Length: 117
Image (tube, rainbow, N blue to C red):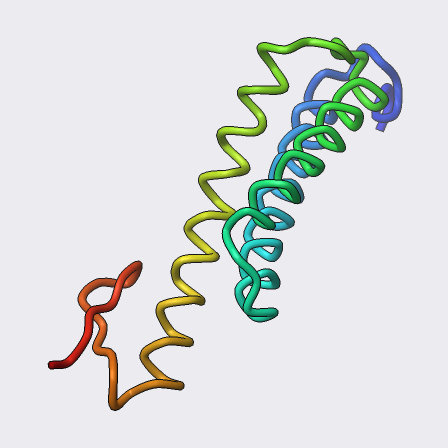
């Protein structure tokens, strides 16, 4: 237990970093799903992911003394979070279209649908 909560204990810091990253990915996933559930457009996913990337940048700065204003890391976080939120949005939107309008649409993949006629 010696050194568990000190800066020199890098093992705990790696676990905390992993948890922060998982929370960010989970939040991005839930963001995409929530936007789709509200029948809003993809632009809303984009804006929310921009904000979420900023929050993740702040968490890395506040918890791990990372750079606060780094365009490279902000874009990197944004691209990763946008991938998760887009996948979630498309999965949920496809399910909505196929289940709610089953007489008009059929699923072609987990991320897309087509007209039945």
